[in-house]
Image (tube, rainbow, N blue to C red; front, side, top):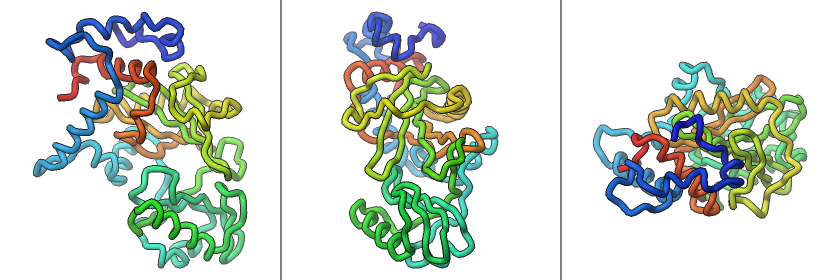
Length: 299
């Protein structure tokens, strides 16, 4: 089956027989019994490959490259893709007051965490007070430090932090931008996860590549159907496809923000967390996307 004929997830849910071909004979599983493809199984194999590569002298796995912000920035610059500007890099919380000197707005985040833990979006009010966009309240510097130290203790990440530019949504309102996470396979998009951060927690909405809302089995307890889709979905989709097609890996989640200046890359996520939590249909669908090209077979 060619890429152009591969159904969207919404269409697959309506007619599951459209992917019956992947359960028969596929070159990626030659000689094996006809079993359904599985995203979780193929991701497990990809993770093992990254682990083997990381143990080989002189070999840098894609997982390591994706965590290197300098490498990512260079790749995105070559593609003409915007990334959030790094204002201050690699400091400890003991130096936070000095680091914030002269900065009116920023996002503070741990260097080695790949989630919203320890992330605060701040807009300066006065010398020691900031508006926190996530919590929708004002925090003094001492409150900020207390919260960040608590996050660091609870989630066990190192005392290495950075400041990024504060991105605002297209409306210009003083609130965190929504995050759109594209499950991408060599330029092809399988699913899209929208993440909205509210004071009471995170809320989610899933879409297929055509921006139809869909159910995947993940985050069911926090799905919010009232979340608005992006203002310019085509621009986000095009950028995610462009970035994914340029990456030296069969799969990577491409995390984008819809900001006032347009789509901005947040980060590349080679191994999304809790990928075993997808429902059976989503797992089969994403697994089938691995098998669109025989070159996607993971040794």
